[in-house]
Image 1 (tube, rainbow, N blue to C red):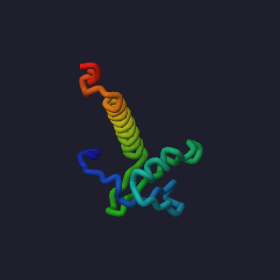
Image 2 (tube, rainbow, N blue to C red):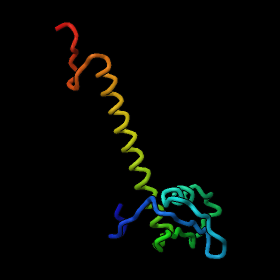
Image 3 (cartoon, one colour):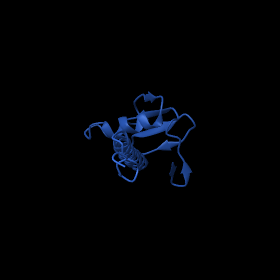
Image 4 (cartoon, rainbow, N blue to C red):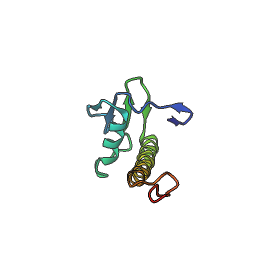
Length: 106
């Protein structure tokens, strides 16, 4: 995924920092850190919160929100593709070809 002209690896280990004074929370994948950050109650969300990857990339709230939107959109697209594949498989199991025509009675 490209963010601000930079390739972002969502599988890279990352640490979420609520603010610059607390210890961070480590996550095995950047995607997990992003989901955790946006799930933080708004009363605890600090403008200074950030996510830092093992490779040294740092993301503030603007980038975290953008990355979360990408994750959310990718998940919705994947779910739609999965549903479509299941629907096609269901038709094929019922004796229909991909065009929706029945193979029975010919």
